[in-house]
Image (cartoon, rainbow, N blue to C red):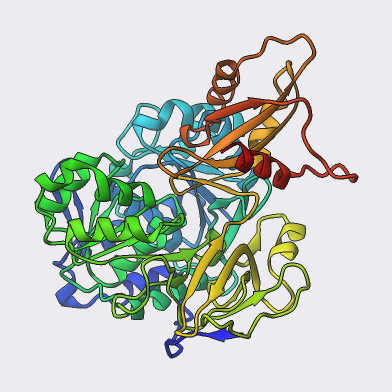
Length: 530
């Protein structure tokens, strides 16, 4: 087993609310917690805590308890922090939904999570209302933050001024959040992350980064994703920094916000790193305030990291994690310039990792002549490992073993100097611009087309070296089905990031004697064709 270079940190056995807001000092109350670039409005820590308490009180008055699940379909706006932490303050569980989801996708998550409430904004209300109706959620339990007729609004709920409840639950076992992840295979599953999971992961990242009060973090990655939720929301709030919210990514707005608000900390995904490295417009902006930039959610090559960092004037770091890990397990610290940018860095405190030979199951511990181990599957154990998948004990047992190690499905090597490099991806899951896409979900949709006899989906690289979904289709005899018809068929039913972007018609989908789809054969076919 490999251990962290950091000493273990103390993990308070408290709810997320107590961890983030319970230690607010008098001098913190006037600090700016949130800035909305759309309006220039600022929210102080004192105001934010009062809003969180009032929202929790309004929910409790309406029967929300520790047994209630509330869904959030909301972009990155300051009100997200109020509602998210208000739900946790009430002791309920929040399931966050991708803002790009269609009504059908929203309904499936609402139903699977058994959500009794849905919280959204006017811009997303058409699909939210349709999904809520289909899932049996009444209009008076669909909260529209920016007000809509027939629905409760945030202002009226806060104006009630109700005291926050005093819920009783065990932070180590009670699910705080229920984001959805495909894991390494299959369709999306609810990931049960406890209050302790979320508290632990913020505690774990603190030694690796020097974020402090006075820093400004630009929150461009979505809060509905665990990366945004933990690292762009909970972490800076705990550190008493300022969060500058962005509802969606636009390169010019992104650069403008850095310049205007003198943002010091930037957490991004590889597509943004690529833009920073190559887009000519970057040179028109003053980005000198940025002293730390980190990329996550998907792999980033070292060359792009170096180019982007050079243009910003700081080192662009990266890390490794999964929704099931709350999410960060490994990161490249700010004080380790000896580690190459192609690496994901060192283990966080309070964790142990293994590399396991996928063929034999044996631990890999010996170093080769070049100072690295042989490649092996990365296993992670620590307080950030999820409680399990919602209502899926089978999937949980396949992912977390009896010793508590989470089997990531990713292949890594370990270096003598104490850092990891990911050398291969989980074979099934596709990551498009940081978003997870389950091939099985797209295959199920494709098989619903009357002229599709069989289908398989794998990830392939586009011209920008970004992974995209490609479908292999066996069409019905005599069919004149086209690529355009296939892509349009899928696009009508999924969020934009899940679209099939390439199609190839073949005679048969390769399968094993047991009928298991052989995606490795399709990957080999793709490699031979390029």
